[in-house]
Amino acid sequence: MKLLVRIILVGLILGVGWGGGTAAAGEPTTVVFLTWKPNQPEVWNELIDRFHQAHPGIKIKIQVGPHSSTEYHAIVTQRLKNKDPSVDVFFMDVIWPPEFANAGWALDLSPMFPAEERDRFLPGPITANTYKGKIYGRPCYLAAGLFYYRRDLLDKYGFKPPEQWPEMLDQGRVILAGEKAPDLKIYSGQFKQYEGLVCDMLEFLWSNGGAVLDPRTGKSRLAEPEALAALAFVREKIIGRAAPVGAINYEEPESLELFVQGKAVFHRNWPYAYAVADDPAKSKVAGRVGVTSLPAFPGHGPASTLGGWQFGLSRWSRRPKEAWRFISFMTSTESQKLLALKAGLAPTRRAVYQDPEVRTALPHLIEFLPSFEHARPRPLSPVYPMISQELQRYFSRAIVDKEADLTALAKITGAKIEQLARLGAAVQP
Image (cartoon, rainbow, N blue to C red; front, side, top):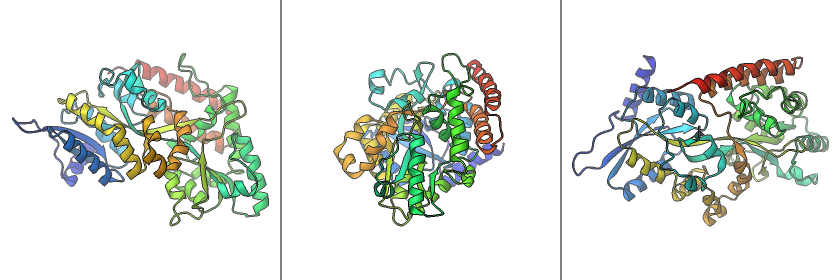
């Protein structure tokens, strides 16, 4: 009941109606786009204005929900659970497509979004939107874990950006010894018990050949040597040593603050952090920041956790053809170029990275591309939120409690995740 009241209040405050509107003769068809409150509303408004100019027979009606991903998810799922036909298009976080597909809320886009068209997008977002061989979302923009570093300090000591995690520690020790700055740390990342911890820890596991689940068998891989070694590395070499002890309470803002204050040599964060770190008004290290792919462990390649947002089309929409035209326009090369240039959002289409104007205006975006190309989605499951809760508790306990038996913890958590994975496979719309 409280959620319903909140939904109604959001609509009233923002001055939007909940009806989709049926077009009378000679009037444009109305398509309702349920979205979250964006950071750059003027850019999105410009795109929608362009759509109206190109498609005068279709009118986009925007309904704006909260900026919080959790709160927005609650509103979208409530509307779709109720088979609300007034919602046509909605946004999905990268971890939502399996849930929405399995529940029968999102329309299968495969007939409209064939394989040859999908090949024009980066692989990670396409994988994240695919469930049981069908695709349920069209990627709009993405994010992935990136490795920031103090270019000035690496140059001073003759180092290139480290390609391996142990190499990062070796370089950091030399730099700290030479700088003699008591507040300077080697590394800053996100290690608080929340979704960001899962993203960070998966990058360590993946870059050592580890994983959470075997997608073929559904068996947990958390207790395998590769995963345990990566976890032990973070507990023994990162927390309280390369990174401050307080890193166990860091989300993105806290970890970034350490870096922009000049108190960390290396830093893991999402693409948005570059604009902050390179802004003289916000950063003491502006103009001295480099960015590249995250390191890996010896014998393995780097890995980044995929983030980002995609458009979904409601199964209950009465205007799917018009809604698809809108989705196609918003994810076109031209639209993604505008979002990159004016909002700094990373494109999901390969071609935008080759655009001369984008390459000139956003050279750092080109540096992000290798990380985007090997970005990997989190476990694809309709019950991922429950899997994430188990992973958050496991990773936090493992890196905070120095006496914890990692193998025993991994086996206990692995058994719970296997059970959840079976539950997800059994759930039907």
